[in-house]
Image 1 (cartoon, protein in one colour):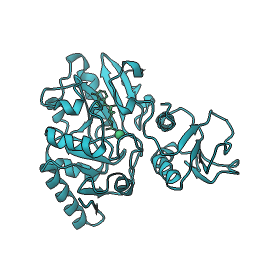
Image 2 (cartoon, protein in one colour):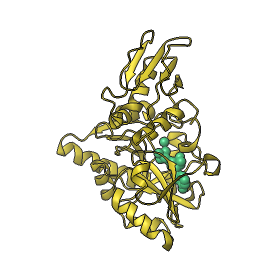
Image 3 (cartoon, protein in one colour):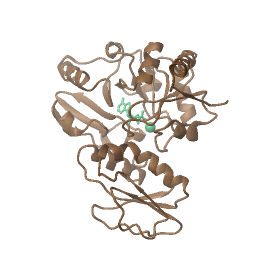
Amino acid sequence: MKTQIAPVRTSTQRADAIEAAVYLLTGGYPVALPTETVYGLAAWALNPEAVLRIFQVKERPKFDPLIVHLPNQDWLNNLCVIHDEDLDLVQSLVARFWPGPLTLVLPRNKIVPDLVTAGLPTVAVRMSAEPVFKEVIEGFGQPLAAPSANRFGRISPTTAAHVYEELNERIHLIVDDGPCEYGVESTIVMPTKGKLWILRDGPVTRAQLSEFGEVETQHRKKMPHGPGQLKSHYAPRARLTLLKHDEAPLPAGKGPVGLLAWCSAPQAKGFAHVEILSRTGNYQEAASTLFAKLRILDSMGMNRIIAESVSEEGLGIAIMDRLRKASGNG
Ligand code: AMP
Ligand code: MG
């Protein structure tokens, strides 16, 4: 199958791309769509055949549950059963962070196919603020399961070109709305009994969430399986070594060694290629270009990547989480 990349620069292109996306989704086919976090591979969440196609295209194991995007907040009550004791907390989080990069894990309703939740009693839901995504899902009028549009275990795509690299000839359509705003996957939280269990760090920070309740970290052993929680995920081809804070980068190892530096690279001698996350030390910029820079280092044939640590505050927590996962030690 030929994969088309549909731009949305003019109003005609935009209308055509949205119409084509809705047409394919209605037929049960997955479509790659931009979101504010990373590009998603979207399909009709309530149609098990459509959902199965996501797993096939991504070569994703069935034990890994998908995040479901909602066309509007009313769908929350169709897909989830929110306990009375959690209602206020859920409503406050939704009012503050939706649409946006926050995924909530909540008890599920029966209409959600088992395949979506990997048989779990909960479902992960969110609402994207990306304008083209919003128009597509509102036009479609049904929830969309949309994991990142990459093959299983690979780095999430943050541009349409990355999606093409990953899924060329596997899907019909990639809607191209330029690079993603945040560049790292959504924050995943399970709100329960006044506590906020963090299942994955992301653009909505722990500090922001702590205004709504006690923030707790769900440890991996107790968590359902899923690559968001596997030790090695979001991995480049090259072996990535994450330096300790203030450890000097040395181009050790066989073959070309690349450096992924934080904001400057005075000690970059001997590295075959250097990428800097943010020259001004800006976390937002660093997060939004992190995956693209890992892809560049991979495409330049680095055998090893040495990555500097960043401070674990605010968005730095999500950046360090992805770097640890890229090093196979998440
Ligand atoms: P993504 O690949 O970005 O769509 O993220 C999917 C990840 O969300 C999975 O790998 C899980 O880590 C997490 N997830 C989805 N559904 C659930 C759920 N019901 N309970 C816990 N985690 C979930
Ligand atoms: Mg993913």
